[in-house]
Amino acid sequence: MTALLAAVTVSCSTADDGAVRAPGLANLSPGELIGTPSAFQGYASFEDLTQQSDTIRYRSTSGIDGSPTEVSGVVFVPKGDPPSAGWPIASIGHSTSGSASRCAPSANIGLLGNLPSVVPFLANGYVVVMTDYQGLGTPGPHPYLEPITAGYNIIDAVRAARAAVPDTSDTWLGYGVSQGGQAVWAANELSDTYGDGLRLLGSVSVSPAADLTLFADAMENGTLTAEQITVLPALLQGLQVGHPELETADYLHGILRERADVFITCVGDKAGLQAKIAESVTPDDYRPTDDAAAQRFRDALANYSVPGSHASQPMLVAYGDQDKLVLPSWTQAAVREGCDLGDVIDLIVAPGQGHGILDIGSATADWVDGRVAGTPAPDACGR
Image 1 (spheres, rainbow, N blue to C red):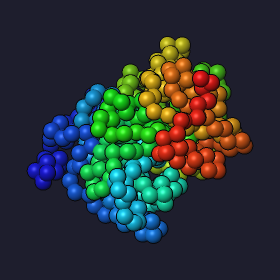
Image 2: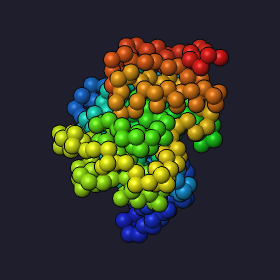
Image 3: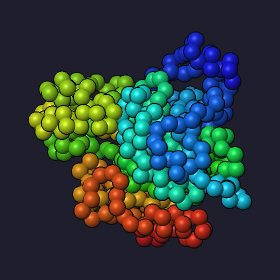
Image 4: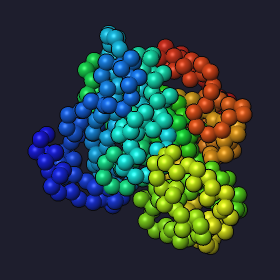
């Protein structure tokens, strides 16, 4: 392993998706640890909830070209003794944190706002692992909202947690918000084929960035909300990792193109300036240059959307009826597509709430407890 780490610093190659590949990764299995975990120093309150908190690096897979990748993350072990069957694992998909490598939650105090996703599972006796996703915390571009890559990262994080923490079981749950909601949805779809040796009980997607194809319609119609304008430069950059044929000049114009750098940063860094610029953006600043450009964008979004295939395990999907980023109709469309594929989906609508973490009372805990108990999952698909 020491030789591998030395090789990483000496020579690397670049894959089709632009990410830097360390030599030797192909010799590792998905989820295998790279190097020794190190103590996580991100938040003092974890001392009351955990007996072990580590940052990790592990081998995963690119969803764009299938090549092996290096991904970072963080793993937490709750207080107390493990159950007789071993600690169950919660694999957390974090919400949008940014596109630069420094925007990795594992490298930031407070996990860049993701504590509320982590703490409840720790308090209920789960080992919690949270991937940074490819390109965050490691070299190379982050394929923002590319679901296959994120799904692989979520699944391999479970394998990495099992390698880092003794007395863990093969049982796991996925939980994610926004970008993370999409990631665990994709992980559920991939669990049968890529999650060999692991037993997924189900996934919870809160405010998921699911069917994104309607984003292209809103751009053509000039109806993007301020929240959607704010995310557009990062979305385009993420799409370009898998679709280099997309030209920035076809989609960003005027002030939005001139100040695109303001929007491609870590979450919270320039929120005030982003909001101010978004207020001044007009439809002409983001409308595709022609029908062909709009179709290219729409096709790329389709490749970055979920559902993409049947999810083998139940899902809980929750969204706010005042969501201005991922519109309620978009989430409803994704759920209908999932139902048509035969998915088992419990759907919760949070009245008066917007995008992000939602107040839905005990619904998540009750749903998770049901999956652990093995009771039939609620199904809003009408079957």
